[in-house]
Every structure is written in structure tokens, then in C-alpha cells.
Length: 115
Image (cartoon, rainbow, N blue to C red; front, side):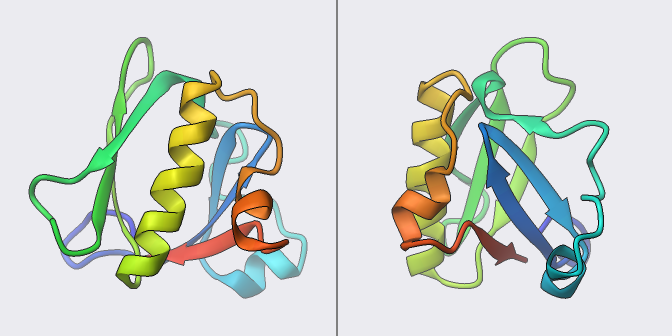
């Protein structure tokens, strides 16, 4: 989920060190372009951390440079949160130069829903 009031459900895909989002999994499966195709989240410009305002399933991408914003995200459950933190952290530490990080982590599924 993207931070908002209420949280906005989105389908996220990590590809080649860039995080993209769609409104739904169906949008992604249909081959539609990501909603942020022109401005993906380049993981090399972010630190990944647990969101101190949302300890349950929240995490953050905090800008460490010239990125224009921080991102507050929330997974559907703790298992997904830990999986996403791990792959996003790996991608971030590698300067955003990792390919299919989520595929490595989740056995071929390189996308997931955040709420």
C-alpha cells in the first residue's frame, strides 16, 4: 500500500533495480505500462527501513541523495514485509543494479501487492 488516508493498494514490481507500481495485479498481467513508468523508483537512491510510525507491516524508502521524495509503504502481512525489505535492501545496497531481486527471493514471483 502507498501511504495515504486511507492507504492506497498498489501492485509493485522490482525490475533491474527500479521499483514500479500498478493499480492492480491485473493491470500488470495485462501488460499495461506502470503508473510511474516515466519516473520509476531507482533503488540506488534510497535506504530501506522499518517505518517508525507503522511497526506492524510498514516500511520506508528514505531518499539518500537527489531523489525527490521518501516513500511510506505497507505490506499485507509480516511475511511479505520482511521479504520486500530484504530484496529492496539488497537492491539499494547494490546501487540499484540488481536485476530480478524479487524473483530470487520469492521463487519466480517478481511482484507483490503493497497496501
